[in-house]
Length: 221
Ligand SMILES: Nc1ncnc2c1ncn2[C@@H]1O[C@H](COP(=O)(O)OP(=O)(O)OP(=O)(O)O)[C@@H](O)[C@H]1O
Ligand SMILES: [Mg+2]
Image 1 (spheres, rainbow, N blue to C red):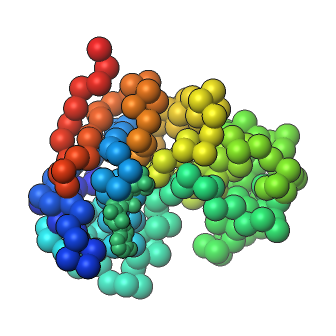
Image 2 (tube, rainbow, N blue to C red):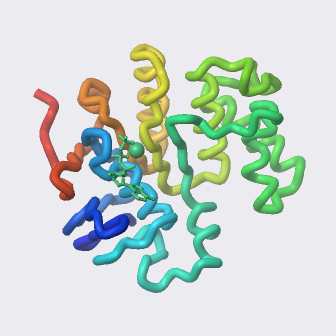
């Protein structure tokens, strides 16, 4: 479902990743850990094909970095859910509208949109806050909206780049639990974090980025 073969990428001749290979199966939960600057966000950008590898190959679903055309990238993104540390909500739209927007751009019918948004807001536990504006929501609630938006197109894979980085430890744990619930219901999750405490509570494999390469590590005692 996700494959990296011997991937290398550099910025201005500065090598960030070298010889990175990784396979992720449908339904897996994989955590990517590493210190700041080790290339966690770069790795995820390669997966949603915001970046192309300088060396090697990236495959996500039926898309491959060596054959994908620029105009196909939005089709890939529509099959993925993507969540960021800073939520990236539209500030002038309510929680409901933020989630609905992700469906409107696909041309969905308005009755379907309402139904799907209500369902997904329920899944993240925020139906009661659906009419709030982002600035009226706590950080944890804003991240739940961002996760609802990422899920509303029923992605096969959810990419979460440091999803708890702006949250206090208790809220971070709640958000991890939500990602685990989503994963249990069948969506593969690839999450990055620099938080080793958090990653110990995550299910599945842990891949550590260090010295430009990726290796599986055992952190759970
Ligand atoms: N567009 C870019 N141009 C130049 N250098 C870049 C670019 N994007 C990332 N880098 C560099 O690549 C390295 C990895 O960056 P990346 O953002 O992937 O790290 P990270 O592990 O996500 O760090 P953090 O934990 O701080 O988010 C860093 O040295 C960064 O400066
Ligand atoms: Mg990052």
